Length: 452
Ligand code: FCB
Image (cartoon, rainbow, N blue to C red):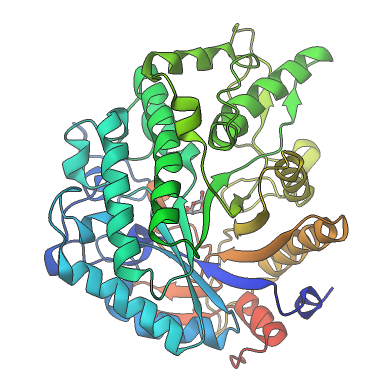
């Protein structure tokens, strides 16, 4: 398999997210986001919620180094760059007046992409909610979904003349489950009411936001992205199936089905009935989004052991592979077939005109040796996952893009700076960027100029 076999209409891109790369947390009038707050929190022992105690204050300094980053993308041969906008640069408190300097930054970034022949793919929300909106309840407050529509309209008006590809949300699962139920991510809530409320309001915002974008930009290519995992349960006989079905409902279906008009799958996971308290008449229609594509984000399969709790037959977790399957440096099982499985499952709904793999990648303990980073396992990871995309296309499924996570090593949320997902190595003390072998592998096949 060669990447060129995918033909000229297939999009090859790299992805990043604002908080993970930008730094400059209060430059040019930016307001604080919940990730600024979260990473600076200390408990009574002085510990932060981030494993290595780092923050995104500097990250890869891309707020200042974006021209260099875009040139890197071009030299690696990619034709698209998926980045996210920090809402609190645009509206420092999440509502009201627009901060022109923040908008200008993204306009410069987009223009730099276009000048370099790199198509901008813009994600509106990659987890960094303005703290001002968190102070009034964040995603547990239905009003936040209205504010998201305002922000969407501001962005459409400001950049709609030069950005064609838009994504509303990055992985609602992590906003809702990691942020509001498990508390491992900002805003660090741990409650069932916060879980149900945020689930419903993010789904509503997806429906409303999609229609606002469509009205403002009838010709735009509009999508949203989801974290997806193949439902594989563990347990004897039918109990394993029950665990799998409940995991599928909680992790995949509760996010995908509401936005295609199917409501919530509470028959498979009774616990989801908790969302009813936040629903109003007509919300099933309101959540239904107007989308051109679904962004599939796949890293690993989560394990779903059977638990004897009615309505909640499993609590899924990351885990090393069954039978000693290979894992990444984070212990995430490497299972390329899982990508084919989630592509098939999303296609089977018959509701998404196109699918795009908007994230996929792996962290390994990369090191620099004589100026080079040899990462053969990452190359193998990409080969095996991209082969799944090729196979899906042969089955007739319209999946027409693949974005590698990530352009460069960056701030990996609650895991800090230790995990390295980049095609490019970040030397944090100097901010030098060192292209890894995996980056050269893409460059050589995609016609980029970068060579060792
Ligand atoms: C995804 C996130 C992305 C990055 C990768 C490793 O879930 O969307 O920001 O953290 O995982």
